[in-house]
Length: 472
Image 1 (cartoon, rainbow, N blue to C red):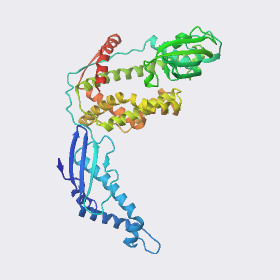
Image 2 (cartoon, rainbow, N blue to C red):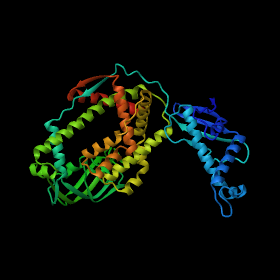
Image 3 (spheres, rainbow, N blue to C red):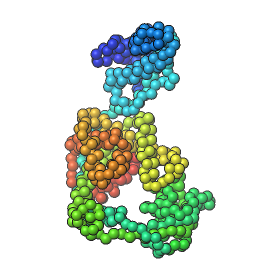
Image 4 (cartoon, one colour):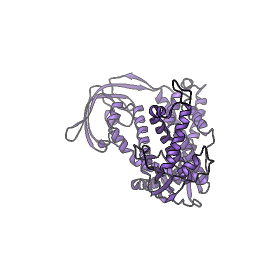
């Protein structure tokens, strides 16, 4: 496709005429990838570069010369390289922006330039290629008549009791003990974990068992159960299939053997739930604490209902829409997810040396999720553009204030919450995506169901979701 830039913006210092001289050829590589071949004629380039030198010279003051009066040969010798580099950089940025605007390309990431060592030629035209990844064009399905279920999630005594137990657990104290140990006690092991051929995959040196039967980054299903009833010095021997939560990907679902001894342990002492317990949490009495927990849970369940409805619509669109994913957009998503995963591992207590040693595996493990996320984001972005959805200027700050309040109001809690959403830009994108999905849902039919019906629906729907992700 051949085109000439015809930017509708006013001519500034004659630059519009310069850019109109560009010869542009755009190759559609795929739905979201464009190669833009640019040729700048020698005479137009020389004229514009001369103007750049004149402007630069007028600002230069050298000893022995009045400002702007330094001879051209001296300016060329001392500043020529810098002037050319700045001119080229500005020209590439401006031409990329103008080409994208003229052709209504919505850029997904920063374009790259070929050749990488591009320089202004001594003679002849300047030629280069701009590699762009743009919002793909694909047909959008009609949403009218699509039915989605909205679960009615209620605050129940069982849910409140579980939340109270979680709060109680967070205030538990530990007392050193020789055992016997029970569920929830803190137990440390010394020994090793080996593969079937005897290769040691983990040395245990007073290694603690954490939630989910995790020990030194390996998920050992049934480990805490094997420890229950045991005492200090007792042996722990078990063969197990490493769980999918294991940090090292190659060990997942691999048969491993643990031979260890309980080297240290402590009992967990839970505080009594009463008015004093409530006051320690910043409330006047237990009734006020219960009411606050009820209100907070009601808000969380409301969000879960909204997420459930949005999720169904998104799953439908993922199955209905197909297009080739822009490669760099997928890579960017993969790197962002792997960095987020690494931060989560660090917060969980995994050593930085372990994370660094498994960096390649962590990145590789995020590829499937990155492709799913990339496709979801691009689908929503198309609808965002089509429906002209935008965020209110205070949307992000309002969200962060509410998130901080729910997390305890501390700066540390707020920063953790922001990190979970991929930083402030990630928060903005998430809120915009939610607003777009809510706008789309206005065209759909929503049917409210009770929690039992919703649970059964989720089970049936899970197979379809996994099948879609396998295809990606």
